[in-house]
Length: 500
Image (cartoon, rainbow, N blue to C red; front, side, top):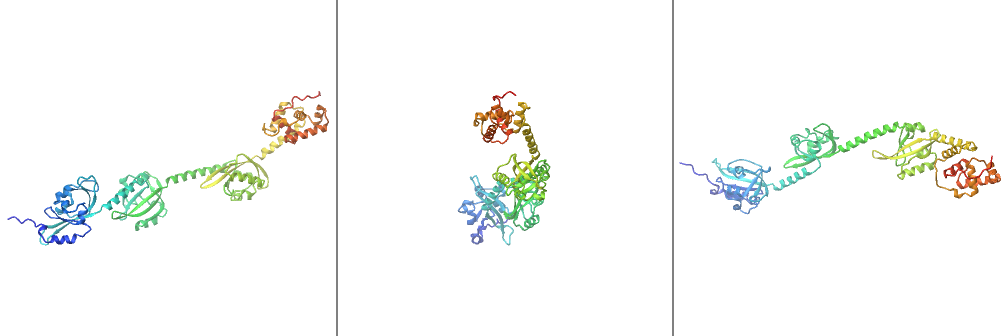
């Protein structure tokens, strides 16, 4: 004799009581008969499927499967035998199965359900009396996670996320992979200390303590070790977050390597500049643009002026009384304050022992680190000036009696005395005819007596003409008058002279 068929839940008085118990739950509940028919669903379960009554959900498991298509979060379709309703009927015990639910005929899922099973047996029988599918709508949570995932991956700022319970990386974005050169799969299988994101951190102990406590890690400099060798300087910070239901730490990074490279290049450049500055044969100094304080002097400056570095550094040039006069100092400082660089500016300075030094001064605006500075160069031309003065005096001495010089030598001596030929000021047209005659004879080397005889005038008359010529052309010596005339192409020809 065959055993009686299993008793369905419809034939029991408990169904009404179950409905009363679970009707107001926030979780969706579907009751399934062992014969695979759907007995009842609460309002939450209907709402989670977008239907108004049990008939729209499906009378049987097969109808449900036809009306609603399920896939896992990895986009793989759920096979028919693995539908949660099928697994409940088969007596499987499962929890926290997450599936995406799509209404048949629609292209995209509408909901994300997290489901678990519950099998109720009679106390005196092994066969199940009631099969229950319990559903939670986790669509909002997974939508938020999807948005976070998209934002995290699209963010160019390098970032990684580790779980706090085992410190293993669970997410890494492209920015971090580009920054370090690590392959993605080699990051996600390692821990915070395998790929040490706190390596050489300024406050590593504090960061490790905060990580262990799941608290915010403040920004600090650290060095990321690169897979090919070497390190990369970064600013790292940690922010605790929840990913799913797991506490995690989000590490973000700012790349400081370009700054470190630039600082290294600047440091090497400054070192080369310092060596060149100290070894330069020209006296040089570096001063602050603001206040004209000297910051550094080289050995040539010390040799020229007698001031050791300790005696002059940190002092304004005005206090040192380096310049011959306050007027010279004010003129030079005003030009620098106005943003001008000096080029071959002649000035006199005082050495420590009081000696006067003729210099050509040049300046250049430079930056040392973040400071605006001025590079000074002083070329000592004292000897050259003295030599020029001696040469001029020698020329003047010989030109007092130039009767034995040829005209070409006279021209050369005049040009040497006044090497800038042509120029502004009074011209020959400002002189009278008689004054031009007197000037012509001066250019030919005549003294006052010979000029008087040549022009048949008194010696006093010649002296008066000479005085007026000097006043008009702005000179006070014979050699200067000759140079003035030569510069204008006037050599004294055309004036008749008596026979010797």
